[in-house]
Length: 554
Image (cartoon, rainbow, N blue to C red; front, side, top):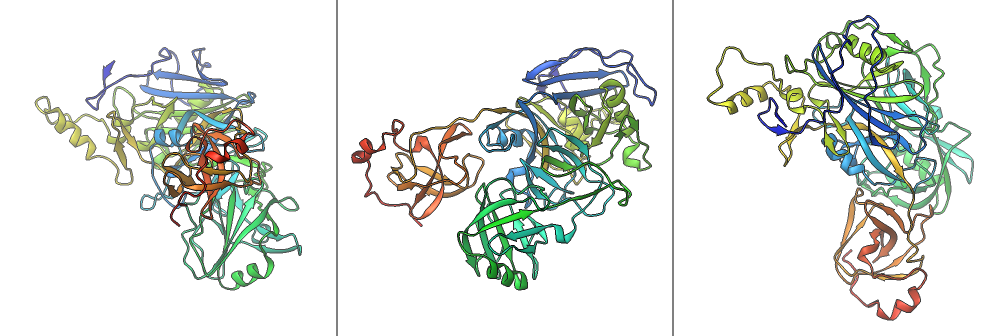
């Protein structure tokens, strides 16, 4: 135990010896000695105490281990704008359903989490783009000199350059007529004469008004980057004319159209029709002219990135003052064998002072043997969580623990804390957790996760009547991470309904889940809110069910 600069006792996760002989200069240095500690299958952690001085926290994931993967995180699960601590996001996504492996069913066991890219300080919307569990949930900006880090379903990793979404390549295909209609955005407010695609990562609903039309589509897989002639297919479940704010269930998208786009959409769809969704990203180098061979097709997880400080083993130079001053840092680096998450503490003279981009690149290349690296949001945002524990000194990263040598605070240590907290950058926001930890509130992040195997219950079947035995909640998806769409009192009667993607009885966030209709409202309910029924034996239990119970309120 030690008292940190925040005048608070905390347990440091010291799992590596000081690294003698590693100096952060542009000169090559010896590879880091063994000292990695197991934190999960295929994932190891090590803390480096460097003499310059810096405390560096590193997790590495074995790229060849099929049991582990990367996943992005979204504050409060909604890209419409939110902030959340890295630790809270890790808890939010722990044991949630994943599409890793090309099918829903496995569950994320979050082992390591870090903060992500910059975000709008007024709205909490992350900058650049994001892919979450295969869903292309936020488009990267067109024709900018960079995009972000990407991880694909085939375990490929790359750092994206300049990208372009050619309008004619972002299309809805009406399979009945083979007609197509382009859409103008993903998870953004709908404009005049626009067709916008909304995915479950946007919000509970589309947040639209009633001036357009919205079509609810159940999809067979996430709406991912998949260029024509390939497509994600889905079935039209509902058409809502002159209605907005459509709820977005977990395996659905909403096509929201206004004006001329509305007319074309309604001319081509009927309930039960099959549609396709194709998306394409044209990829360039940073000059936005030279072709980049890295393919965004079937990207599984991605977030924006800042300085691409290491490119194929070459340290990059930057003129930006923000790259050349020492500060807390968060980064993602990789080589052919490992993905590395790196967090460097800073703003604490004599203890951990932070790194420049050159120093960060040197550490990643010469210390970790990484060949590629990209920075994330740093400063007060820099946070690493390992198995639910914040391992770095978020207090000094956030408040700046530079000593004030002109004032004696020995009689009032709390005054020193108030002075430090007054130095917080106005764009940064933090929360004080119940255990006394100051944690930055950020918009997104990246995680290393172990995929737990699919578990299913066979207690019910489509058409089975059910009744709630406790006060319950009906949700947009199978898991506590999905929004509640109705509160169900005891004795609410319903019926198990068919699920196109065959996930009835799936286990997630600590429970088995069933798709059910209560009073005409369809959603997902926990099995433990329903009577226990031995598998396949619902008929013998029918006499015990109060099927005349009052249905839930509409």
